[in-house]
Amino acid sequence: MSQPFDLLVEPGRMDPLDLGDSAAMEFASTPEEVGRSTKWSALASELTTNMHEVIGHASGKVEERLNGNPQAAIKEQFSALEEARADLVALYFLPDPKLVEIGLISKADQHEIVLAEYESYTRNALVQLRRVREGTQIEEDHMRNRQMIVGWLMGNTKAIDVRVRDGKTYYVMTDPAAFREGVGRLLAEVQRIKAEGDYTGAKQLFEKYGVHFDPKLRDEVVARVDRLHLPSYTGFVMPKLEAIPEKTEAGSSRIDTPRGIVDVKITYPQDLTAQMLEFSAATRSLRQ
Ligand SMILES: [Zn+2]
Image (cartoon, rainbow, N blue to C red; front, side, top):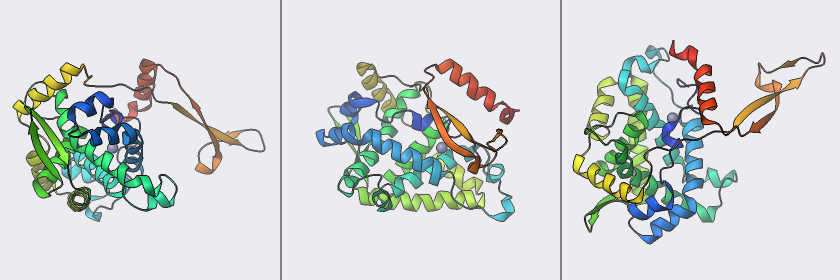
C-alpha cells in the first residue's frame, strides 16, 4: 500500500525471469526443467505476479507505534524488504489448493506449475547477475530481494543445490516441499522485521544474502548470456485501462467510488515513450 503505483513500476516482475527458451536451455540443469519452463513459466509468472501485487503488498499488519510508516524505521532497506515480502507471499501460496478451488489452474497441473516457478525463481538468482557488469554489489531493490530469497534458501534449507558441469554453474531446485517450507519461515521473519520496524534485522538479512556476489560467477554468467545474445533488460508497453463510469440520471458521470465503474476499456497504445511520459506525469506529485 505504501507504493500506490507498484503495478506500473514493477520492473522486476516485468522482466521475464526466463528470457524465453534459450536462457532456460542454458541455465536449467535438465531437459525436464527446460520443458517445464517452456510449458508453464508464462502462466506461473502471471499467477505469482498477481499474488505479489494483490495478496503480497496489500497484506500484513505493522505495530501501532510505527504509525503505519515502517519505511521511516527501515529506511534504505525498506523497498527490497517489501518486495521480498510480496514475492514470498506469492511463492508460498502458489501450491495452495485455493488456486484450484477458484478455477485458476487445474489440480492436475498445479505441481508442475509450482516446480516451473520455483525452478525459474532459483535460476534467476544466477541469470540476473548479467545485469551487474561492474562491481560486486546489487543495487536494484527487486534484484536484491530475489538474490536474498534464493541465498537465504541456499543457506537455510536443502531445497537448492549448486552444481558445476563443464565449467558451468547451475542453481538447481531439488525439493519443492523444502523450498516452500523455507519460504514460509523466511516470510515470517521478513514480516516480523517490517511489523517491528527492525532496521538492523533488515540490514543484516540483505548484507548477508542480497547485496554481495562473487565476481567470478558473474563473469561466467555474462559470458554465457553474451554467447546467446540475451538482452539484460526488456521493456514493455502495457495495455491502457480506462474506467467506464456509470451514467447517473442527470447524464453526468461519477467515478469517485468503485460502485461508479461499470466497465473497463482496454486499449494497446504500442508506444513506450508516450506511456512512460504519461506514467511520469501521473506520479509527479509523489516525487516532489
Ligand atoms: Zn512489488
